[in-house]
Image: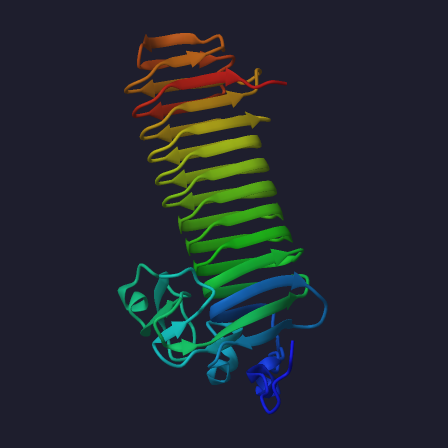
Length: 361
């Protein structure tokens, strides 16, 4: 092809900066040490990871993000008897691009950056602070803060987060995780663990210590747990547990199935407003109470169990492979005794079949 003198291709005269744009500098982590045995951390938006480490205090590495990251303020002081680190977001609307499109969360935030740490049943506490909206778009303060929190052994740490994500790995200490709308995952923790979630899934594995999970909406999965008391409550969502050893297990969901396997507990309470219940209980069983408004129930207990039994369904069949000394028997109601009758088993469903079976040995 013949070249035409005096003409230069258009791409050849573009500024170099347009061809190879310069990379934006990465945000540097800011490091804070929070002294004291009891520590509280407050952050409205971001991903938080808690992990073990040494040192006299809890260390938080804070990485700001978003176009307005420089507007965030960090403060430290004592709040409600605990040393605190607070990330303060100016304004009443925050844009957090990591949220799914169209989603938003509202909560009340005090001027010092604290939230969600008072009695929600108290009207004054519930209405304290300004109303803040956190959304995926629509304008507002474009800022968030990701945290890496290093927890020495034996500390008590309370984390308050509005939106984002929480991940806890290998921490030895008492933890309180309070989030408005975020998934929470914990693994290999030692110490009492309390999780409160407004909306979001919760997954707990390898927990040693008392466990409490309370979520307004979201599935809950718990496995390999050892503690005196295990309590799970959700307004809506399936609850699944496996390999739990405890003196007392309580599960309550407004709507959703309950699936319990490899459970060793003497006191068991399982209740769902709507959903099936399937539970396999071993060990010394003293008191088991299972109830659903609508759904089938299958309960497996050790062949050697001794208990007074009361089984009732408004619509459905009753089936058992135990020898029962029957005191009352109708299609929808069975009472009687299994073995020495030392314990108690109550099973009830508004609509659904009920099976009380011997667990495999």
